[in-house]
Image (tube, rainbow, N blue to C red; front, side, top):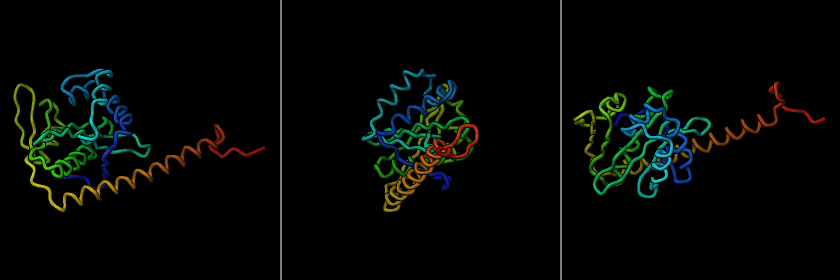
Length: 202
């Protein structure tokens, strides 16, 4: 799988469901249509996020310095396959975020032991079609829709180590970003309005 190794992808927990919801709701109408096949409203998107079973499925994210999700991937597990849905905010595309999310999901699906990873999308979704081809997926198109499939080899020691290592690095990065964000907010709280300088006691 091809991925940008400088982009850190972290598996999310159910505690981060609100952050995932904010990310999904930030998608524009056209992006929602391309991601889900139809332009879902806010209520439907909230219901979708609320139904995700974080214990059965896997959700991955790429975060900015303020810990907001720039991109997210939902890997839904079936008995012998896994379905992947990917979303990247409009202003963040072309940076390799989608490819990094797909590569991380590919690794996770192999470790699950499933044999097929697939994505279903509209044929006009050029970004996802390009991403699927770049990752070596086979694409079958019919009636304006497309299915991209990738046969997965069995997991091995390298895939298990790779997943653990990727998660640990991403967790360290998350902790560092959280510390820096809190420091910035604390500094802002003590800054004098209009000057950017710390307020002095009188």
